[in-house]
Length: 228
Image 1 (tube, rainbow, N blue to C red):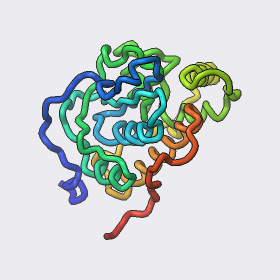
Image 2 (cartoon, one colour):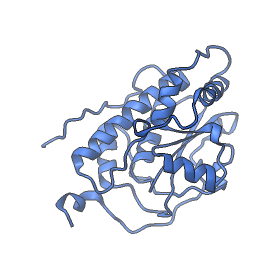
Image 3 (spheres, rainbow, N blue to C red):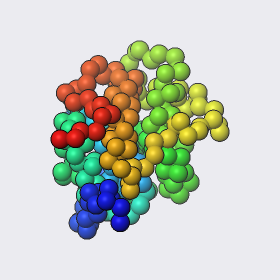
Image 4 (tube, rainbow, N blue to C red):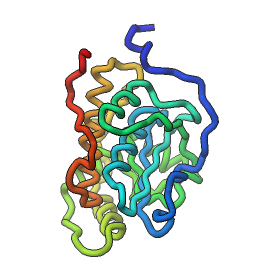
C-alpha cells in the first residue's frame, strides 16, 4: 500500500441512523429549505460541504444533510476530512456515513452531488427530481447566470432560485469543470485542494442561495499543505 494511503482511516462501520435529517431542531420542523449533499461514500466531500453550509446557515430555516451512493453505513469520515474540517472550525467527529435511499429523498428541496454519476444514481435509480438535482459547481455557475430574486421569505426565494437555475440549465452542457473529483486514495495535498474548493463553493452557495454574508466563523482554508 502506498504510504499516503495509510492515513485515510478505513475504520470498521458502526450502527447509524437512517434518518438523514434527524438533526433538525424544533424550529426547523416548520417550513424550511432542505438541502442534501451526495457523494460516493459520504466520508469526505458531502460531510465537509454539509458541515460548512450548516455553520453558514445557523439560525436560518435551512436543514442540511449528507449521504453517499455506496452502502458503507456507519463508517466514520476519512481522517483527512476530519483534520481539514477541524482546521476550518467544524467537527466531523460525530459523523457516520449513510447511503442514500428513496426515503432519504422525501421533501428534499435541493440535491447537490459532486460528480454526474451521483446525480444519475439519485435521479435514475432512486427517483430524485431532476429539476432539483445539480452538481455543486454546476449550481453555483447557474445561480450566477439567473435573474436576481429579491422578494419573499428566504425559503421561497431559495426555491425560486433553484427553479430558475433548472430552467437555465442546458441539457448536455455539463463538463468536467462542473465536477469535484473524489479524494479517496490520493495524496494529502490533493485532498486539501479538494477541501479548499468545497469550502469556497459552500461559501458561494450560502451567499447566492440564502443571502448569507460573511464566513459564519469558518476558518478559510488555503491550498498550502502544512508541514507542521
